[in-house]
Length: 592
Image 1 (cartoon, rainbow, N blue to C red):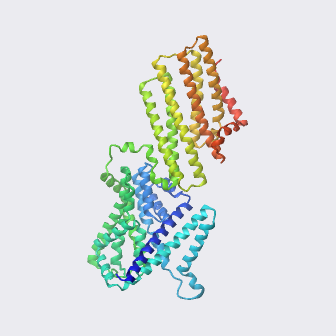
Image 2 (cartoon, helix red, strand yellow):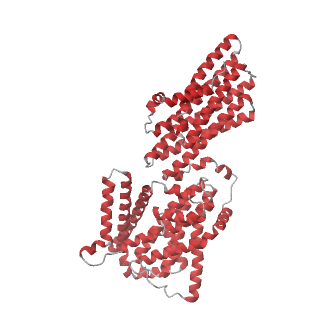
Image 3 (cartoon, rainbow, N blue to C red):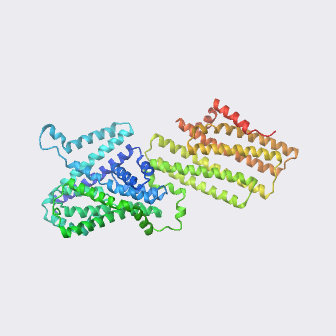
C-alpha cells in the first residue's frame, strides 16, 4: 500500500472515531438535558404496542441510539417492570428511530453554494464551526449544569460533522480505484452484502456509524442501489449485537427481549429481501445501478426500517409466543420475579430509573418490616412455631433488602444527580438502616414470645393491660411512620415524634410499675425480665420510626445534618407537637 493509501486509511479511522465520539457526546447531552426523564416516560407510557412503537421511535431519535433504548428495555423486562409484549413495541420503535441519525448526517453535505460573501456563511462547514464555538463556550464557562449539557450537545454535533467530513475526504480517492469498484460489485450479491453489513456493524457496535460510513462512500458516487440495499439490511441485523451482549446474565424474559431485536431485523431482511429480489428476478428494476447519494441512503435506511415495523407490528403477539418457545421458563423463574430484580444494574446509568426502582424496593422493604412487626405482636398472645419461623424468614428477607439496596444506592451516588435526586438518595440511605432495625426488633419480640410460651409465663392482669396499651401505641407509630414514608406524607411524619416521646414516657412509667409489682410479690422475677425486654424493643421500634420521620422532615427543609440529628428532634417541639402529644396521651392512657 502506498503512503497516500496509508494516510487515507488513517484519516478514515480518525473520521470514524470522531463520528462515534460526537454521536455519543450528543446523545448523552440530550439525555441529561431531558433530566433523565425519558426512561421513566418510556416505562410508564408504553401500555399498548402502538404507544410502545411511537415512544421507542421518539426516545431513540432523541438519544441517537437504538441499542441504548433496547438495552434499557431489556433491563425493564429483566426487573419485572415490563412485559415482553410491551417491550417488543418499544424495540420496533427503536429500530425505526435510529434512522434519524442518517438524516442528521445529510446536513454535513449541505453547502451554501460556491458564491462568495454572505452566502458562503450558509455552508455546513461554517455553521458547524459556529456550533462548535458556542458549544465550547457553554461547556467551559457556564456554571449551570443544563447549559453545560447543551454545550455537550452542540460540541457532539460539531464533532460528528467534522468526523463525517474527515471520512468523506478519506474515501473520495476510492472513486478512482478499480479494485474498490470491483469489490463493491461483489457486495451487490444480496447474501454477501448482508453478511458484510452485519459483520461491519458488529465490529463498530453502532448501526448509525455503519450507515454514516456508507453515506460517506455514497458521497463519492460509487455506491449503487444494488450495493446499498443488502448492506443496509446487514447493518440492521448487525445492530442487534450490543443488545444481545446486554442480556448476558439476564433472566429468561430479559434474554427473550434481547433476542426480539435480532428477530425483528432478521425477519425484516428475509421478508423484504425475498420479496424485492423475487420481483426483481422477473421485472428487472431499472434503478438497480443508479448511484446513491447521502440523502438516498438515509431515505432507503428509513424506508426499510419503517416497512419492517409496519409489516411486523400486527404480529407482536405471535413474536412474543415464538420467543417464549425459544427461551422456556426455568424452575427458578418464579424466584427471579422477586423484588430484588427491580434493582437492575443496567439502570444505574439512568439515575431517574434507578432511584424510582430503589424507591419501590425500599417501600416494599418497609412494608415487609411493618408486617413482620405485626406478626411478632400476634405471637405474644398466640404463639406457634410456624408463625415464629415465618417471622425469622421475613427478617432474612429484610436483611437482604438492606444489603442489596445499600450497595445499589452507593452505585447511584457515583453518577451525576440533580438536587432532588441527591435528596432522594440521601433519604433512602438514611432510612434503610432504620427499617431493617424495626424488623430486627420484631424478631426480638418474637423471641420474647417464644420464651413466654416455652416457660409458660403468665403476666398479671395489670401487666397485660399495660402491655396492650403499649402494643397499640407502638403499632400506631410503626403504621404512621411506614405509611408516611411510602406515601411521602409529610403531615403524617410530623405526628411521629410526639407519639415517640409519649412511648418513651410510657416505657419509663411501666418499668417503675413493674418494679413495684415485683416488690409486692404480684409478679415474679422471670416475668420481669421478659416484660423489660418487650418494653425495650417497643421503645427501640419507636426510636427508629422517629428517625424515619425526622429524615423526611429535615431533608424536605434542605437542612439535614447527621451531627445535629438529636438537636433537630428537640427543636421540632411546636404548637402542633403539643396538640398531637395531648391527643396521643388521651388515646394511650394507662389504666389506673
